[in-house]
Image (cartoon, rainbow, N blue to C red; front, side):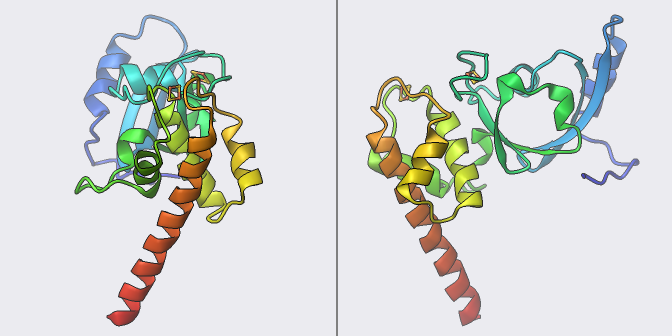
Length: 195
Ligand code: FES
Ligand code: FES
């Protein structure tokens, strides 16, 4: 649960007040969550999806809208480390949660995350429409299974649809992401040991 200092002005507070002023009688719920490491607050209608809120209110256009039925995975984001279809998640459900999108994957200095670098290296995308969902899925997979075997990767990737690549290069990209991620962890550990 995110702890909040009530005296602190959050980035979403003005928006929350505006939304409350505009409230027209529909059931609305205040929601506070963390978006890519920053506090966020808004008021959502009971039927607003997380996809609508992320794209519409927070400008997160990297979160793709495609089937909007929970089938293709293009809209995948992480909620408390778990990949979810944001089109099939009510916005009120993320109250108190940590939400991560593709916009938060790269480091502050622009360094790509292991999945981003791996997909670029291995050509794991063509048109790119599915790619942000695939990257979030891969990020969630590697947090749960840092060294996944091919069967595990296939099982996870089967939740997301790619209409271009034929999947082989996506599988290779996920394997490469695991390798890069493990290399980075080893480098970080040896760096700590040298201090
Ligand atoms: S757009 Fe959400 S699963 Fe297809
Ligand atoms: S790269 Fe085009 S849908 Fe996957």
